[in-house]
Image (cartoon, rainbow, N blue to C red; front, top):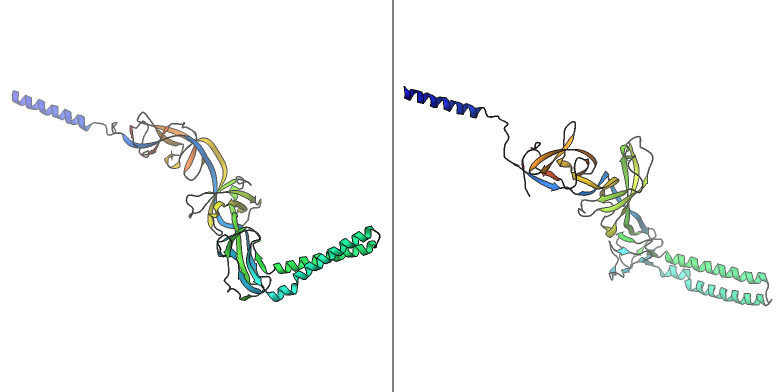
Length: 353
């Protein structure tokens, strides 16, 4: 009988222990800490941007043709010691190509016209001296002035006609087109000689959506980027804006001037323009992808004493990657930037480096 009672007591005790284990709450707090990465918040700057794209064009560009016919003479670039070629930099007034025609040059008779002007000036000086002494009339003296003026015009026109044989750069630029002609072969009038561009400053025509018309203003700064220049951002500015909205596209036109230092951007490149329409300095800036939201709020997690603390935030300006926090975070807060997806209020966390 005693053995039976002892066995019964043992069974009842086992049942109590088993029942207690099975009734343990499913959502009981766990002491396991969630691994997270944090970022200590510092104040910085952020800009509100409006993005657009377009083709960069040179500020100055020209295609020069031969004004006269003559023997083709491509000149030597003094910077390289070799004949001019594509990509060479040229200065305003620099001789690039000369056309020679001895018969044409002789017909201009530049030496004779210089001599005629010299003789006319000597005669004028003589007549002035005689007029002061009463030796000639005023009309006779004035006739010598007419001769000097005509001789000067003849000489200037002769020089202009000779200049037609020279192809010179009308501005500082780069040779972008140089058709090939055999040296000393006659080139006819009107043939293409050289193409020049100045793209140290460039411009870009843009079309912006109607919704941006209240944000975009003249003289606003612009950042220009191109996929071939991943490490370079060029500075630009809004130079012109049309007040009219297209009824077909619901856009308005504008123009951007680009500072192309080092000639990194090339004419014809399709570039991206980020127009800075607003800016905040000394602001709390956080990555956009850490912000969680529901219908009523936006929130993030910070870490305080190895505990995740939920913070409701109010946001302001944003760019492609970051967002300004107006309320809810302070400088030096440790913001959770990795591992926040599964966190709950007051979760235990383990900060990883």
